[in-house]
Length: 297
Image (cartoon, rainbow, N blue to C red; front, side, top):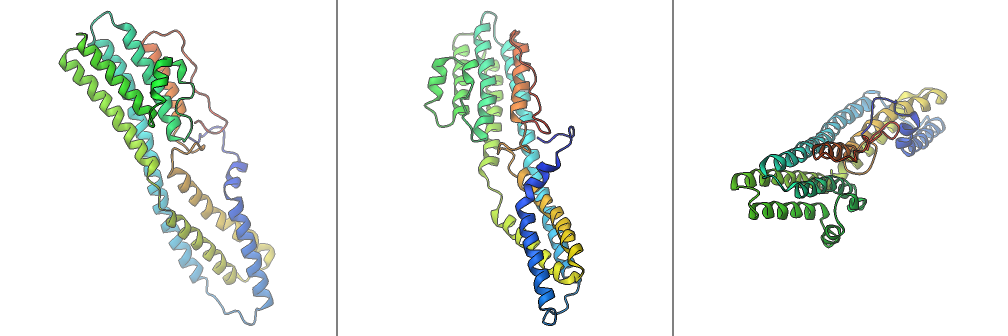
């Protein structure tokens, strides 16, 4: 997730559209050459034509940014619910189980931390069991390696422990229902995040928008009929605004792609780790996840 401070470096911004600006430069110089060489054959193009195309681009960009932000905000709300339910799970275990089973509560609490990190890694397409040995046993790690969906396997282990607590008389029926509901909400949150990850924003929309921006550049270059020393920089400045907005929408529509604009899942998982370890009075409390320059992941 991008941060307000420190400021986003200009190099990062320009790096996102450098190839688009290069294409615009080639197009503008080509149009400038043709209009000067074949000026007597070129018809007069009124500025109303590029103005109309620019208006259409603005509408398309507004729609794209709105829809992309909705996807990004939904992802952030999902992880907000994961924070709440992770805390609730541990507090429920501590308040609803009978005395004498602190070790099993700690086992589930640490596994819940592992689940948060594993889910974040899985959504980003990274190794979902990396560094989980700090939170779960080798036996459990070996067991979840057999599963394709590693976070789901961890939730299944939660369910088995809750059932064992109920069978051992540590939980009554009402308490088990409460814990099962929390577990269900965690499973729902995972499913919602996986739905966003697997649902692709229409690629044709981005291609159509890109083509329309290039069409706008061509028509504007023909219509301006000004000195090339001023026309080319002007076209680059105008088109860069459109391309930056389009690139922002493209990045926000995929909030789990391990980019600076991602939902900060690692930072959220670290916050959950700190909260849970304090709840179970673990002495190994890590520091909060630090920003990587102008963003936090």
